[in-house]
Image (cartoon, rainbow, N blue to C red; front, side, top):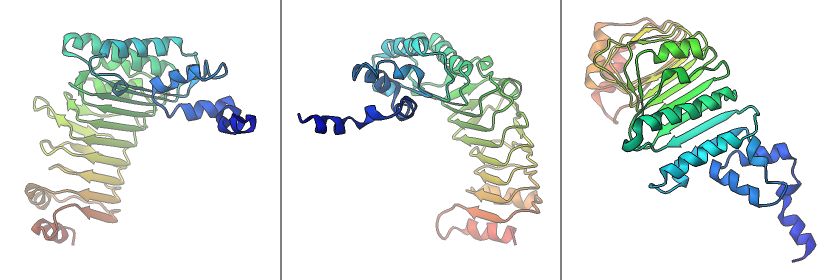
Length: 291
């Protein structure tokens, strides 16, 4: 091969280490480790990446033990430098469910000890239950949990253990708690396809929120949302959001009747977005309510 052509084909190696680490951090974790065979210079770059994306889908379905060994080794051999983001997508088997939940919690705890500001966990099979003490970090600002059971005390732990948390997303979560509150730092709260246990009379009371998305038709949850400016609802509930500026409704037949029975006051409301089938009579009922 022409030396000039060889040089031009390896422009990545001419980049500074910090830029290479940033580029590599967008790869899945297994791919980043595999870059160590490219050259002597690349051998240890994976040990100090600002992001870790531990993705089980890089392994075969029956390779759960190999995945667990890989993640343990990855975290143990990583250099003790701060971590920006930790993404974990894990398959926990029935045969070692409790051990698997505990191990996933230890990985998240390790990432938080490395000052990760963003953590996302996805359970690819059954819902996972964490010891909520795992979530202790003054550096955590964004947390996303998919397919989890949140036991009583979880939100209280976030309030005290993660005082700077700003953005919380819960997807397909089962919430076994009655008081959903947080520190003054939480600004964005999103519930998607999550379920609130009928054993608890749950309520949301977070005055610092500026944006709330809630899809749950079963419970009346909203109590104190004094700073909310963007509210996206698909549920039947009470509202106390005097600073609300944008309201998105995806109404069922019942929600309009509830609005008529319990009108609410939003002096700063500017935009009302209604999501419903074209020509739906519910649209006119919503219009009538707000005029």
